[in-house]
Length: 482
Image 1 (cartoon, rainbow, N blue to C red):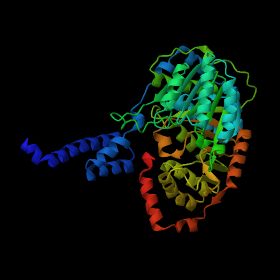
Image 2: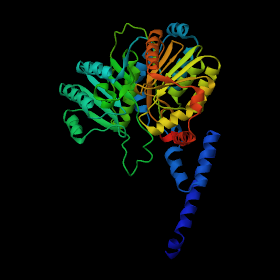
Image 3: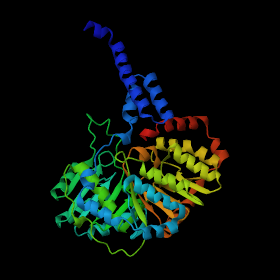
């Protein structure tokens, strides 16, 4: 015992480096990006204990360690039948190819990655801001007849949240099936409201609950999706969470966001995606029936794919779709994102496109809701400006929309930010839309947002103080945890 007391520090150091060297071997065998691997190796060897902690929290290869299996849902006969029904014939594919030309490369990419079916018969309604979204959503919820499914990163029982949850309670009392998935980190619902929901017969489960004893490995994996499915006929997806922060009528600071309402075939893959999450969080092996996938009478023909990504997918599906769309652009790319902390692939794609004399514009907030994210975002802007990318900072308030328009024929609306967390760690979902009308409407949204934005000029931006640049550099290093 005396030996242990007198040599505690030395013993801890030996244990640290024993584990660290084991981690170094693991990193080398995984053959990850050399820069990333070297960074972790230096940290492990140069920073005793701290290096191990950082690697444990952020250095794991997320997609190689599947968090949950979706086989129980995807192997059910009804799901296989629905997916089979969604397959298009060659005539449908050729029709889309004629419209999209090179942009159609995104379709097989997503299909091969994640069996993300291209659906044709859809109606899409673009929604600007939370005030409009909840007005439309509440009407749909009140008219629901069979079931309502919600999956949200943020649900709070504040004014708008309480109104929504009360509607759900009323519908549950009428006999509807109500299922809710909330992220355990992003959401905040009082015990009183949880009891009320339970007493009403509503089933609600948290996504990967965080407890002190086992929180370290779970803090990273967050369900960042915002999904609503009503009666299997109506779907919602986009950037708007359930919180008063998203309601301009309740706030002094203007919150700019984009959401979409879907009807048609695309609701079916959105429903399947919800069931895969529900199967994981509930622990119940729910037998899925045809009633969750009713026939639709949609007469519009908007081609659309539901693209999901997360640590449970083999590939970074949404990021890869964005990358392919950018690299195949022939005229312009317009991106709106609240957090621009991308990987090198996206940065290079945008730089090359701008240097090829294409019109590349990016809107980010001038003032973020996170000062660390703001500084990290700003650290990337100079390299975009140098390549000829036009960068604008939104000044009217906080812009939280996550959208992209390419060549007026392809657009993306969803939950995915242009950042490390969305690309690699969080569970995300985007609607990839192949339609000129929707692209035109989103372009109008974009141009209107430009009116409330300041265009950055390279020379003046480069003249930021050294202190500001240093803070940006440090914030950038923290990108994996932002």
